[in-house]
Length: 89
Image 1 (cartoon, rainbow, N blue to C red):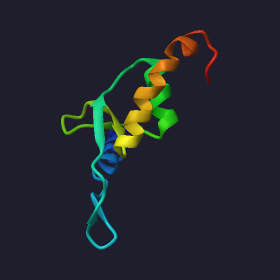
Image 2 (image 1 turned 90 degrees about the vertical axis):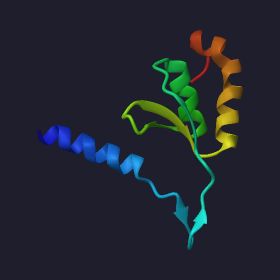
Image 3 (image 1 turned 45 degrees about the vertical axis):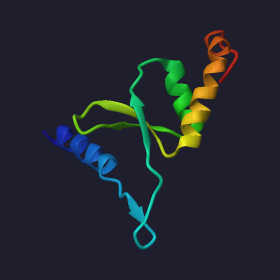
Image 4 (image 1 turned 90 degrees about the horizontal axis):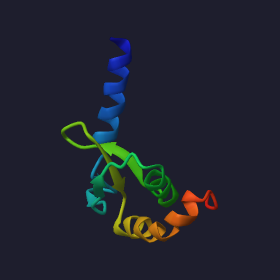
């Protein structure tokens, strides 16, 4: 049971990040897309500073802090062929 409890605590911390900082000023809205098990998609996510998080149903999702991160993620799709050849790290 200890193991499951620590996993729950980790998920709770990720899901409950504050939406307001600096005296009530709102942060930019996060962008979420469905999780992908594809290594290239996870590589793109890490390159732009995105993260794997969980939705309210407990399913994994890709999360971006802002639209700029998401657009950069989309632009990296042009490197898919090179990634598959092992030319991009």
